[in-house]
Length: 324
Image 1 (cartoon, rainbow, N blue to C red):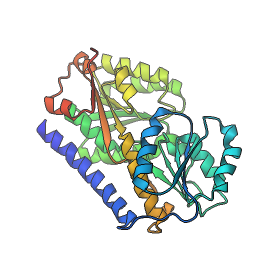
Image 2: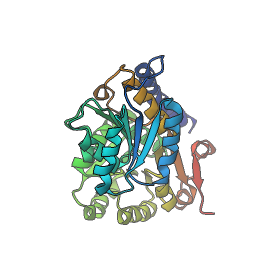
Image 3: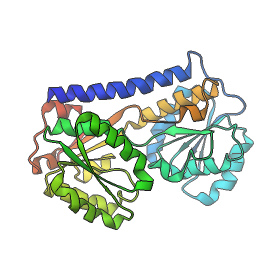
């Protein structure tokens, strides 16, 4: 088990080290100075999860920041964006899908205005970087290699992992999963679906051939009905299942791995400085993986499937659910 812990730490160090090194390179030694008006944060709604990244972003950026809220209503976009554009913002930092898509549309004819997005699940679905060079962001998905390594830490018997996905929405994630699986010596069993109702059949087709299941944050897969069904089936079939978000682990999935939310603000600030200072363009920075993750572990589920995680594995968890 100590060997797997070393392997996970090594993978995370490599991933974080490369990303952090790139951010330092992009940011440069000096402080970024915004040209023109303030940096503007645009929230999709009043989601409480946005508060920590915004606070960290403000603190780390060191430049004037103003915050606007779309309040979940896309019809408010024209009036809100007119107010924002009147400020001549130096950069837009958007949180959530609605704010990010609105910013994309409103900057189509403003290629000089950088847009940095974060906390957009399955950002590829919205085509956020398609056809525009002014948009960059932070991926909401944890690297598949990190997820696989945690699965192997919990259970050395993991050799074959299933993944169910929609090709158009999660094709890039599955491509990364294939590469990571090959490096770690895992066989990846894939099933592509077009509709949420096809998930159960896809799962039943592969369940006898897999030891674990990677549950993607794919809108076709990630419905309340599907997650509830998968939670029960993973337990019944004694599978090592890993999802994304604390709530999934609370519901009973064995393990979930999430980006570290406060770190998103700090990462975004570094990326924003790199662009505002002229060291890099948004297109060159691209969409980066999140720096830092949180691991959630459901010990009640582990007990029900006959899994007994080591103390080292439990200690690595950011939060443990034991049903008590």
